[in-house]
Image (cartoon, rainbow, N blue to C red; front, side):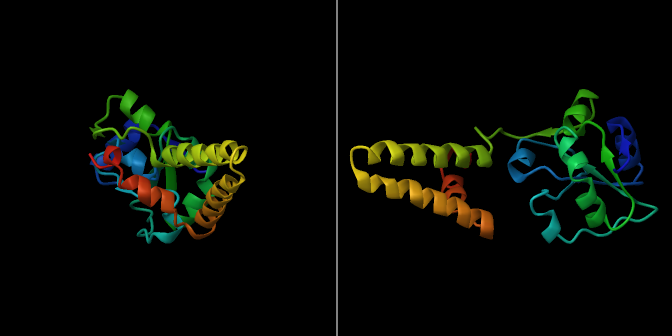
Length: 171
């Protein structure tokens, strides 16, 4: 378990240049609100990113939305830090509640992962219901299921690529 610091303590140490703050929230979360001075390193991509290692003089402090993601992935974060690592207690939520500076960005209608869940679920349900009248529609559900498996195995999600081009995601 990594030690935690309060948002106020992290802010003071960040301003003094004593720490590096790394935000592990996903891209769609960062697009809504960010902390000035924090490095973006989404947790899903963190094992593939090359972070400069933490040092005793400048440890890395990891931050997520509420603190639960960083706590539950503390072993991975500690390994990626390559040196002293800490967590922000309460994440961005606590940071903002403490009145510390944040940058708000135009909010996306829904995070991408939720758009994918809604789209895939709708297609599967439609395929199943339509197959009651036209049996060939069962293949739509099978195609979506195969696409989800492919996305999980490879990290490439065709539905995410398609949804990213939709007008509500291009504001």
